[in-house]
Image 1 (cartoon, rainbow, N blue to C red):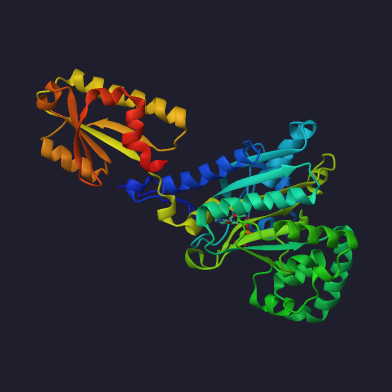
Image 2: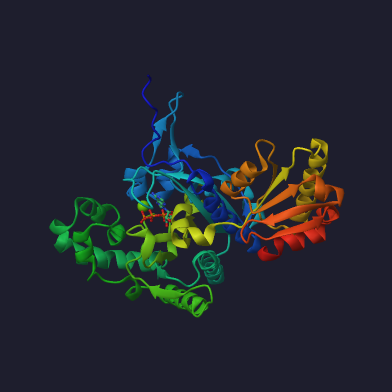
Length: 444
Ligand code: ATP
Ligand code: MG
């Protein structure tokens, strides 16, 4: 027999709940992000899953972890170097320039899809994962930073309530502040060079700020006493950061706010505001950053466009799922199983099922209820067997069609959760309002 084919390490299939998977949970998270994107005025776009390698290496920085170690890069048959996207921002900025979207500024764009990074797989860390991504392009105001962060908070709050996400926030300052700070940091770190990790010894020359983002314990011990960016901010940067913190303070959506002077984010393109939402405890373990972002005023220009100040963030869908937990994500559903007695002519059952399907279809369109509805007819086996199968398949309601009830113009509806049975006039099945009352009141 041929050897069994294996999935690629760090990737996984997302199966329906009924097969032990979590597709419905995944869908709930993405749908929530998309709904909130619309609510805040974002338009959705989709960009290719791969780009020319330069799109990422030039924007994210050659010394970033992602570019130096984590990209899936390969040559095409034509000899071009291409890379599976490790994040959205660079590709969206490229698309912004390629499509001449400057004329539509300011522009708010939402995207979602798979992202690829060559990392050591563990819980909350995969080689193919998914992100929801928000970019607010062409608005330099501190209010745009604040509203973007509030939207991020809104997503987290909806999924996890106030149960434990902290907003970490910092500023990298403007160029002037960063240059002064960089010198101070290098002066502090240079005497410790020999004790720094190999990576950080290289960073000390190429990109010293990134040492603050290092995951190595030896680096962390040294950087604990390093000078802080907040002491080197220009008057303008300081003022901007204070305004931002004031705008975010006491928001309903932000359970806890902490200024974190070591937060620099791993990528080159950030300026001024950087932030992360970090889960405190529970399922996520060490992979506790669920959402991260910041301002990137220089990126579009660096990629060949006009100067375009922007702010954005991305969240890992899998980590949001872990944060929310399964019970918060299980969507309500309506699953009706029709069981006709043998004596009932199939056409009568089709008519009944057809009425139900059409009415539910109207109802869903009209109310925009996002309840997955299924109406299935169970044809095979004894009535008892079919009842058992309906229970096993997690039907929420069973409609029994027997000659007795048919002759009275009714059917029997059993609510599986409570076991209650009720004889219901067939006319109710063609009455949208009656159906809404019967099946949907608990979802409103
Ligand atoms: P980490 O510090 O955990 O490596 P990061 O700083 O590399 O995260 P970002 O580039 O900011 O992550 O990506 C934004 C979000 O995408 C993260 O907050 C996280 O939720 C998610 N994410 C990043 N890498 C992975 C991964 N390998 N698997 C699953 N989710 C991920
Ligand atoms: Mg990472």
